[in-house]
Image (cartoon, rainbow over all chains, first blue to last red; front, side):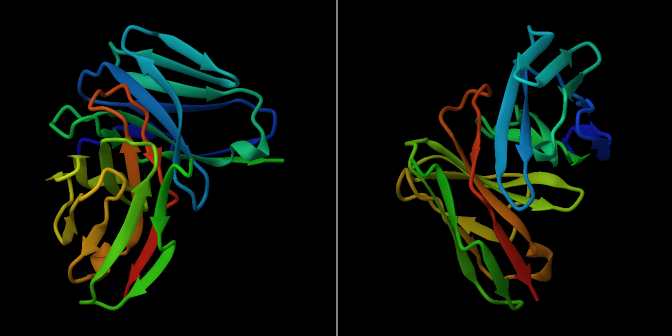
Length: 113
Length: 114
C-alpha cells in the first residue's frame, strides 16, 4: 500500500488539552495536506504545508513537516468537544493520478467535555 | 454554491443488483474522483476524471464503471454488486492537476450489499 501512516490510531483527551497526531510517509513529497472528517460526513481540508516550510499555523492548528524524517505532525491546541473527528494526512500521488491524493488511515480524536 | 453533492445518502442492495451513485459539483472543477472508505483502510481511489469525456482507473477500480459526459456530473456505476463493495463512497473534486490543490468532498453514500 502507498498509504501513509497516522499515529496514534485513536486519541482520547479532555477539553482544553492539546492533541498531537503524527503522519509518516515513504516517498519524497512537495506538500502534505491534513483533512478532518466528522462522523458520518465528508472530509474537509484543514491545511497544506509545502516541502520548503517547516511549520504552518491556522487558528488553533499547527502543522510541522520534517522532510528528512518523512513525517508531519498536526497539533490542535486547547481542544474543544467540537474537535472530535477523524484526522487524515494526504500526500500527492505522483503515480499518474493527476492531482489526486493518497490518504493515510486516520487518527480518531475524541475530546471529552 | 452547493459544492459537491451525492445521492443517495444510504443504499441497500442485494448481491448481483446494479445501481448508480450520483455525484455533482457546481465549482466548475475539471477534476473529479471517487473514493471508497473502509474501516481501518483510509480512503482508496476507485476512478477519477480529468475532464468531460476523460476517465481513468485508480487503485481499486474492479467492479465499478464511470463516465463523465459533463463537467458537473460524475456518476459511479456498480455493475453487479458484491458484499465486498459494502463501504462508504465519497466523491471529490479539485481545480487543477497540481498537487497543491485542496480537494472538496461530498457527504458520502453508505452502501450495504447483502
